Image 1: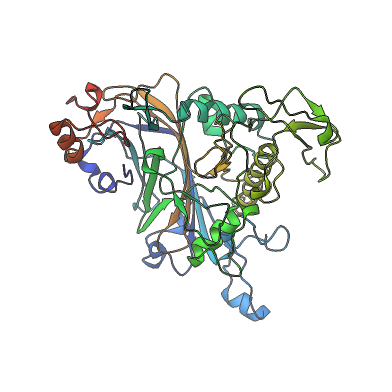
Image 2 (image 1 turned 120 degrees about the vertical axis):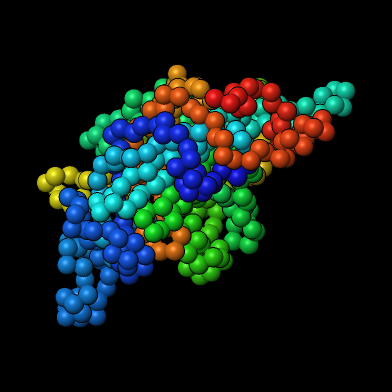
Length: 489
């Protein structure tokens, strides 16, 4: 199901104003020279309380710098520059604006496709509109078909409960490792803190992986639509902006490929070492063995008495000073097709370090005055699928780690049906379609009563399948009689 639905942004006047926002804010990096919003003088920079420049372009002479560099540019271009993962920061000059969100309209609807769409409209200084939307599938539960002993096909959950496992692993990590504002992630997850026992949805629509066996020659693997839990899009005045897709490998490699359109060039070649995949045999346990410490791999014994076994390598994490810990833990070793990775634990540690480095790179350009601290903080979330049993092949999400830029968390008591009450928080990262403009948005929302969208056509595919009594085993049930998606409230 395709969940990037622009019509709600265009037809908001027809929708109920039934969603509110608190603790919301945004920061926009408007590209100097290519931002249509700036070119049309529709963003009054002088009316913002927070407005400054980021400009680390290289100039041939001091005279050129004096003539061309943005006059209010931060003095950040010598130390910790250029950025490694947020490479867009070094692709030109940016006018930066930030403020709290006070939407004049908020809407929450269940569409005819069954998705929950939440949108907000906010007037920036001067009266122009910032609007954004996120959409999730309330019934997200990927399934697949199997044959029973009588040869009849039936649908069963694929790997288990995705939302519950996403929530347990990732929100549990935030609670245990990233709730201290003085830590490496600062206040990046501040809006999530009240909902760490809730339900996490990754907005992973249009994301893709690379084949780790031949990453630079095989075409990318698009995530199947049934694995896509949600999406987001928006518009900052004149500029259409779209969610940044999840990364299943080094963001630097993904960025270079998306910029060039190819994965096989000299400067944008992607390798197995770039991908967050561990070549585990079928049945090996991707999760760390918490009860077995080691000095060398010889201390780790492989247990072959059941499923999810095979702790056969000693992994020693990197210390804060860049060294190696004296004592390690026994892990399942990655095979030879996974580049130089040692174990899933090493991949997980590496991706979390990338997330922390992204926070640092963004904090540098999100801090107008060091004495006052950053005006906005953000970091992506990491999920390493420790709960999935490996099947021994690279396709799929088992033995992969993921880096997610867009996510929504619902309070554990939320009712995501028509008439239900829901609340939670979101963090969104938008990249412009026609410029290097970037927009970051976060906040907490409350929806006292979810409404049904009366302005969309019925889902014709579903109607015809129901009419003909057809059931597609390769897709979600289309004959769902749940009245929550069909009532007229």
